[in-house]
Length: 212
Image 1 (tube, rainbow, N blue to C red):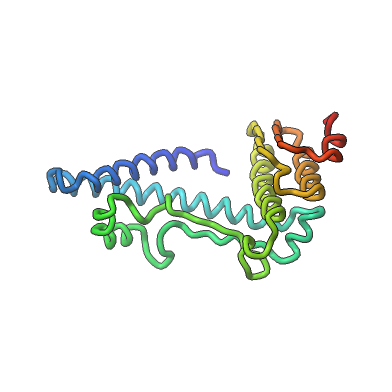
Image 2 (cartoon, helix red, strand yellow; image 1 turned 135 degrees about the horizontal axis):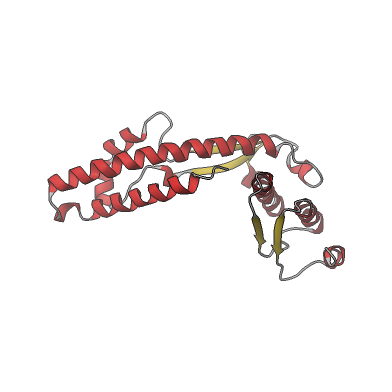
């Protein structure tokens, strides 16, 4: 987790907002001024997208390395096949963002928004050469998603960054075994402050954690 990610993201979002606004007002504005403004916002967008992409790749690689180190049931069953994180940066890997913005300007102009960039990033998890969403149950998917978040939380606490964890309705899609694993793992993170809610809390879990 990089402290300056938010700074780059804020600058990027400002550039994106202004570029999209420029696209929507293009036909009713001075074309010379439009082209100058477009060049400025494109340059800023490309610079910040590169910074954001590099930081995301670093974080994803770190997450990829750490996710296999998690242990304990029921995660061992979920991780019986290697979990891989597939990341899409928001523009084709074989092209630069500069090329994408230039080559798709007319389409962007007709749609009124920017089709390529860091804001269009995507990622999904695969295991045993299949999408995790196609192979795992909803409870297992939720456990895996929480596991990824726990890794990030642990990284923050190791850097002495204050963390407040909010999980709403943890028990909605988890059986007792999955819920116990999540709670046990969270309970080990003494530096993080935790708030966990549930419409219905299993009696076994309520009794076990009522004094913690």
